[in-house]
Length: 205
Image 1 (tube, helix red, strand yellow):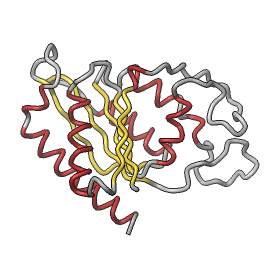
Image 2 (cartoon, rainbow, N blue to C red):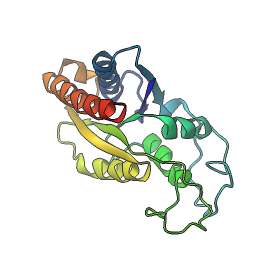
Image 3 (cartoon, rainbow, N blue to C red):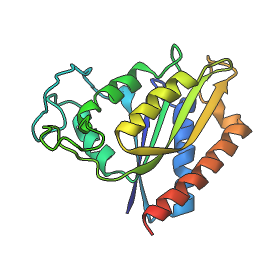
C-alpha cells in the first residue's frame, strides 16, 4: 500500500489551502487507484506542538525530547511514500503552525548530509527519497518565494523531492475556499498529480 501524507498549516478549516491539498490527494487516488493508495491528511492547527527548544543533543532512540502531538507525526513522515505540504502566506513566509512543525523536524535526521560522521549521535532514519509537492495560498499580490524557500529547505531535510508547486492568490481574503472556483488551480492540480503519479509508480515498479 502506497502511503500519502498531506499536511496543512492553515488555521482555517475549509480554507483554500485545505481544499487544494484535498483535490490533489483525490486526483492521486484516482490516478493510482484507491485500493493502492492510503491517504492521511493532518491539520496542524488542531495539534499541540511545542516550539523547538534547540536542545542540541540527540534524544537517544526517540525523535525528540518532547512528547506532544509531533510524536505520532514523526513516524508518518518517515514512512510516507509521498508528502504534500500546504500553507497560507503570512508576512511573506509560512504560517506559525507550519513553522512550528518544520522546526520540530530538526532532529529527524543528522545534520551530516553526507553521512561522513559515523560517531554522530543523531539516528539516521531517512533511507530513501520520496516525491512531494507544495501548496501555497495568499492574496492577489502575495509573494510566494519566501515560503517556497522555507519549504524547499524543509523538503531537503526530510528527503522529499518536490515535483510541483501549486500557488493561488485569492481575490478576497475575507472568503475561505475561493480556490474551488479557480480553473487555474485545477490545471495546476492536474499537472502536479500527473508528475507525482509518475514518480510514485517509478518508485514502486
